[in-house]
Picture 1 (spheres, helix red, strand yellow):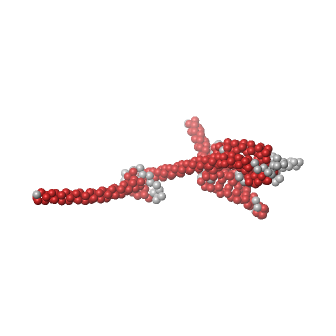
Picture 2: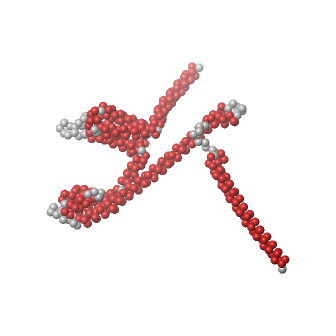
Picture 3: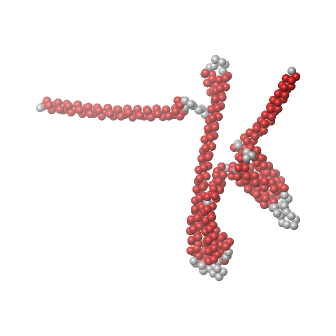
Length: 394
């Protein structure tokens, strides 16, 4: 008996341990679901958007000398609040998606900005420096990196994100055009340096070295001030420079530059089409989920009503009345029988209207046919009478 009691105690203790471990596992799982519901909720992105906009506004106001010194405490508290908010967002997202978080480039960018924003908290005002050397790290430069937090708006707004993806794809596909344009500019820069930078009869200010020639050609590509450059060359007596200008503008601007613009437009159209497709798919999924939830809820209500009926004395009319009371006017009813669906009723009524119109048209046609037959009959009778009279007269 003692051995049996010991075994029962041991089993009960093992069950208690298993139950306690299950409870411990349920608690983190419940907390995980709670955090995941917060992150995936639409209002969470809206809160992030409002916070980023307010942060950008505070950064803009902090540039004013008077406001920065008068409301120093407010800006200090605001910066601490923003740092705490972004840290909380980072920890929540890493907790929910520890691996997928680092696969997104926007998330990596946010993490880098967060780390950089914490560096000034561990530095003195003049930065990290050796007393015998100049400061190695500038706190003001690090603080300017916090301005890049405004780019957190990009992944929140889907349209802006699509535009950013289009710009990134443009750089990937348009790098060949840019490389070719750079080669053409390099060739024309060397020719301009050799033929337009003569110290006696050339323009040494704009073409005296390779860097100045590159800058002048870049301004010509944008068609900004190229006439002034040409006038300066003509003042130095270089009239043949017009051929140089016309050739460069025709090749770089009308061909290569417009080719790059065409690549940008093509990528923007592709991104807009992809964005519209994703948006349409998401809307269809939401509608499907709502229909499924409504159907499941209605099934559960019907099952509960059936269970509450007392045995064989169930009244079908009472059950229908309870179902009517459980439904709301905004609920969608999914009908399996086509004869009871609104679309079938609409089509059936339209078919009846078309049938009435057809019957009326047939009645008019029959009446017109009867009139024609009557006229023909009268004509035949008159002809027969006329022939009979002629036969009698003969």
